[in-house]
Image: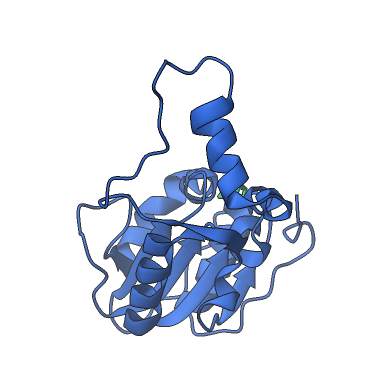
Length: 187
Ligand code: SF4
């Protein structure tokens, strides 16, 4: 649980992002608790919800939470693939689309109509948002590997803090990640 991390020759750069995710995988990452302190001795964070960096620079490891549900997700995911040496699909949504992919058996136009035009409790005159600032939804939710090459998959909704810790420990030490007993699950 609190074994020391292997020391890399220099501080590694890690970027993280939530695409069509719920931030639960990031919360689980923070569940490594006091192990964040030794981790910060070994790595620095680039673009991440934990920092104020707007674009992903060259990184050693990219952690992708969430599947791909809109045009901006595609853009950001490609940026991460271009900048990160090792890209990890973190959590069920990134691995296989997760629960948000349940919308895949519905037509996206019908969903938008139900939510913004015909659903209960809407104000009179409600419209489907159409500001060009908003990213267009894709017809279906996709796992990240359908858009870019992914190097590692860490399942779980979310993966536990212990699983993320063990996984990162292996990556930082340039080992093939192996989750020990009890760390690999899909729920
Ligand atoms: S895998 Fe689960 S915890 Fe992680 S982003 Fe998806 S719904 Fe949230």
